Image (cartoon, rainbow, N blue to C red; front, side, top):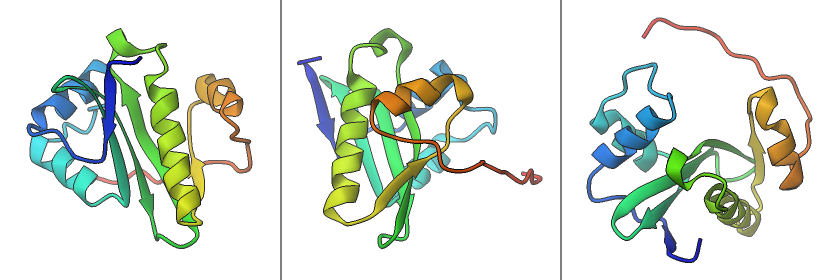
Amino acid sequence: MENINYSIEPPKNFEQLLTLYESLGWNSLNLTISELERMCKQSWYTIYAFDQQKLVGMGRVISDGVITGIICGVGVLPSYQSKGVGKEMLKLIVEHCEQNRVIPQLMCTESLESYYKKLGFEKFAIGMTKQINR
């Protein structure tokens, strides 16, 4: 979309990120606005997509800055999906990783495997998680 601006500058109000997460059903941990802000600010790289001042997408990388960067939280408001916003954010994320010689990796649900394959990612491992009390 030509009217979307991509920036590493965060939104003035992280309440917009809470809205994005809730619109995608991603807030099962009941994260607060301040936790979401801290999550972004502590990430190695974060990219935001804006339509004017409205946050419509976000993606981030957690990394050691040397070997591996784990892409996570790439999401776009439902009304802006399938318009290339996520694809553009991923392109910018991968470019940033390449410039820093960091290998971009991600975990995704099986339903998104073909989406990421089209963007040049390939399956390489089994993802594992450990449930904790929060």
